[in-house]
Image: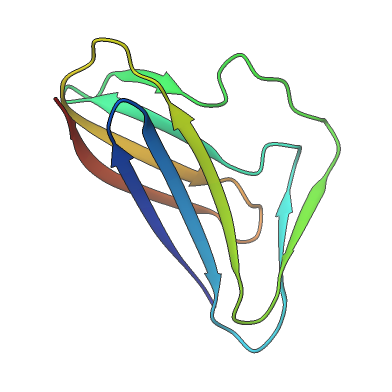
Length: 111
């Protein structure tokens, strides 16, 4: 069984961490359609997307897998450097796994 924890640390840089925990006694294989194993994006208070990690990036076209050992954690992390941003935002973490997809949301403030 997989569980996830999504954390956002907001400061001059915003740090995103998606921890995917394998709580089972068996190894779990995460299968991906391409090289994009995760994504993070940020929406403002009105729901408009203001930043996406994967935008303008290229990913391999080949299938990919990631093995998560029993009782282990797969960590996906990225950073965003907002310029002149302030207010309430929602960060979304996406694990686009074919067999174990995850989407988590966290609200945060920038001052």
